[in-house]
Amino acid sequence: MNEKSKNAKYLNIFRDYAEHFLIYSFIGWIYESIWCCMIYHHRGFINRGFLFGPWLPIYGIGFFIILGIFRLLKIKKPIPVFIIGAVIATTAELIASYIIDAAIGRSLWDYTGYFMNFEGRIALVPGLMFGLMICAAICLIHPAIIKFQNRIKTSKIHNICFLVIAVLFLIDLISRIWLGSNI
Image (cartoon, rainbow, N blue to C red; front, top):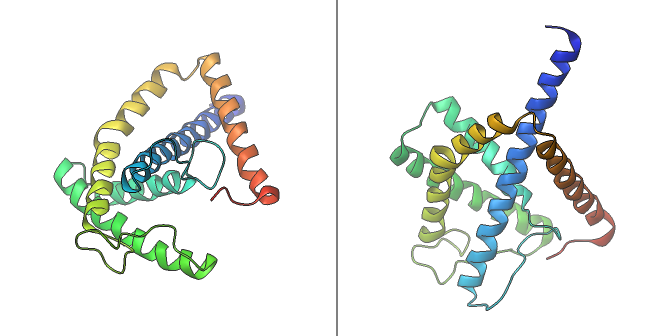
């Protein structure tokens, strides 16, 4: 394999992973926006992200962690993926709640009124929702994304769309330094 083709291969791998990050950040943003509209009985749009754009990077990062764990454990069947995913996500949410409280002095969510909640930080229903999302991502969405990426890998339109979205994301992320949080 020559140097040029090796570089192209690594660039494609980077692009694929960056797309995964952006896709799951977008899915997380949609989930949070809908979930919060339902929780707070808010009619209309709620942007739950700390960025202006339609992405929550914690979901992109979280997906890579979850994917890595499931690949390491070699778990692919839906029921174990759901159960283990719900436990991992709920544990991560609990830990994150303490870190966020310590970092910014307030919590960003409160499950106090929910069945089987712990200090309003975690609860049964959100944990089950995370389990369902992880199961859908690992068993359905991610394989479909990879299949789609393999079909359009060399498309110029695909590369241009990716570049535009990635640049918009980076601008949004960098602008937070000067503009502060969107929350």
